Length: 101
Image (cartoon, rainbow, N blue to C red):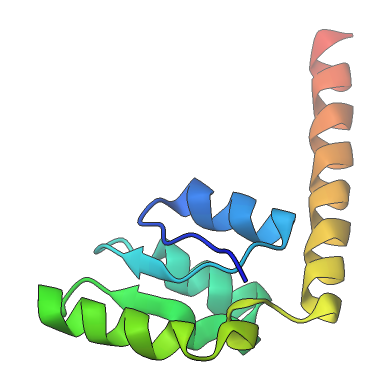
């Protein structure tokens, strides 16, 4: 199974949308953890906190890739995210139409 490792929030989001396995190394803002906790609790353990030293990060990455199926959110979680994205996309489009009219 192929996958990526990302430190960028949009890398995490796009990987999830594409169904690509993704361990994420998070910096101090906590956006990765909040996204995963709110929408994909099944992959919560795949967010690696930057407070670990480089050896700690490597150890966590190795532990995560030993279970590749744990890297992919459940189908129900992905379907729920797609529905929410559609809702917000429609809402933003309506707001722009209102602004422009």
